[in-house]
Length: 448
Image (cartoon, rainbow, N blue to C red; front, top):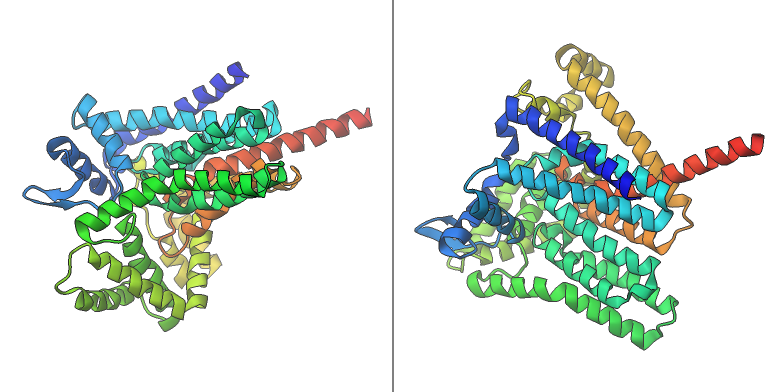
């Protein structure tokens, strides 16, 4: 087991360092993304002023858009190595190797050594995971923390004798992971429902099951509620992260109205913000995001069908992304990734393919290769899902995939939201690969 695991770690390390070297030697701007400064500035303020705040002195205010998980990680790296980008990326590469280890161990617990090997290999070579490691964003750190929590949780399901203390620790890590990426702020609540069923089925009794479920729920919820209370006291914002209110209005609600009115999202977002600002006058600045949330929810509830369509399109966008363009941007061949969706919308399929072949042949060929990879991975995932007789650990992995997919949808659904989903897909794909090889070997033996 250990030898195979080290082989997987070595493969993952070589591929991540190779992509790092590609971007380092051709386009170092690739490492810094548009959202990166919004994490760096709070990290710098934590070091200089010992406050989690946004802005530049003297115009600083309590940070409520970003949560402190990733800025704290950046602050620790800055304290150790100074204000440099490369140490952050090298730390993320090291952390990403843990993702491969956890994927291997989770698949091993569920399906044995062969499943662990194939799951770890798929995670090691996954393009999305390789690329995200080399961007100063939350994806890698959140994915590793999520995997650590899921590993602890599933180890209890597989080996009940390990006790509920491990389960409690898993839910605590799950809560802390939400401080890195707020999308996880409801995941523990969903998983508590799964574990209520598991405990009741395993003879804990109704009252005992409810008691333990309540303990797990409190472990997960209390840190999140505590931070939400901090936001309310300091700014008047009633929520965990104001980015959710911003996105819900400017992307969720605006895209819903754009679909309904056959207009552009930017136009609808501007109209919505004008209405929000009219109501905001004279109030504490954090309440701006409360008003955003209220207006967004009103729009969505009045246009449920259009919102559902927007969400579904976003989910498809996340799952169909291949990250092919990132390789060309990192290599300096392209300054930025062109909006091919815009071209596709205005052309027939035949014209679009001819256009791509003439102007972006390399991207088209790489995209085709990656499409083949992802189709193969998804087929293995489905095989793994349906060949495990719906074991509870598999259901936990599936619940995480569905949760992240649904909350990553909408017009904001982009390739980077796929990052925490990919390790979970790799786990199921490893189970599928193991099952497929078993059937093939059994067929060969039967024919002898």
